[in-house]
Image (cartoon, rainbow, N blue to C red; front, side, top):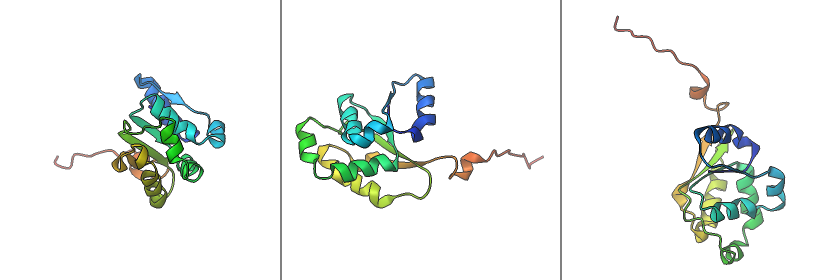
Length: 136
């Protein structure tokens, strides 16, 4: 699994605790080199990766015209089965779709990209629910 922002900290700690191989990329390095995350996904043959909308936006805006040169450098995203955008707030469907379409030429499957919402947004996760047996 590959994680690239501090947004993913809780997920990364869970994966380390579960024994999954995890790669953390400092946000400061991503800001200067947006291709770093995608190249790491390709190099390490990552199947499951997580990112934030800001990373997806950096890749879309910063690498939009460079897909051919990235392909020439060996970028291959065909092994990615899930690319989860960890979001807090409203889904950014247009960004997700443009990212998927932009990187489909380097093997990214459109169905691989999805969005997951954190506990602040999803009340079903935040609330503890106790069930009462009403049959008695």
